[in-house]
Length: 148
Length: 126
Image 1: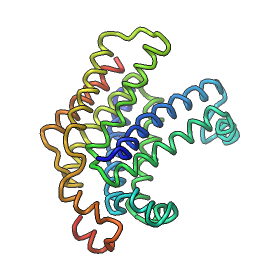
Image 2 (image 1 turned 90 degrees about the vertical axis):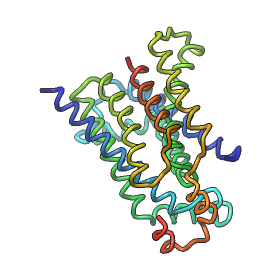
Image 3 (image 1 turned 60 degrees about the horizontal axis):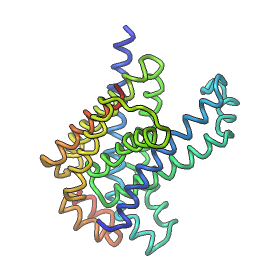
Image 4 (image 1 turned 120 degrees about the vertical axis):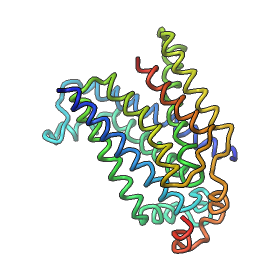
């Protein structure tokens, strides 16, 4: 794991969280405009809302970080990183907006943080794959398929 | 009656998003280290190789179905039931599926982590 790879994992957490929040804010702002497949103009208007646009862009960035992480790390290693967003939101709510956080939620935060710590302390990729991965670009797809 | 629909939607979300994650992970392992490929051949080579991987497109479709199942689930059940239930069950289902289909070494460390995160997500939503 290099510094650049930790940055990609951080990108997953931050972009997913910020994207969801911006999207939620934009959709609330649109309020009772009925956004559904039956109301295509409503759907298009929703995309024009700057909060929604920013949210969608951030979620695209999240997806790019997510699939690039999956190209060099195990799924079971990358997934806990996505759950750190819950912790991030709670901490921003507590220290940014001075909201109260119930003891149950603190316990939830502790459990998620402990889970992420457990995974992060271990190997990021199953060993045979690490070997495969480091020569990934030069292999031809056919021999790869056999190994998979 | 509504509860059955909500749990059916939760089951569908867990199934489709796990399928999507496994397919995406499988296709990205076939593509190889994206960072290396980007440095060597540029961003277009990365995009081309990713989009030409059939399991990637299937994974995207599964993710799309998962998203619409979530929308349906939210119209049948409470936000406070559907979101945490599907999110936490997906963590456990992904650990099982990654072991079976991706042959990832899911040791005691990762099992504990999957269960801790799943439990934590439920508590966060209470």
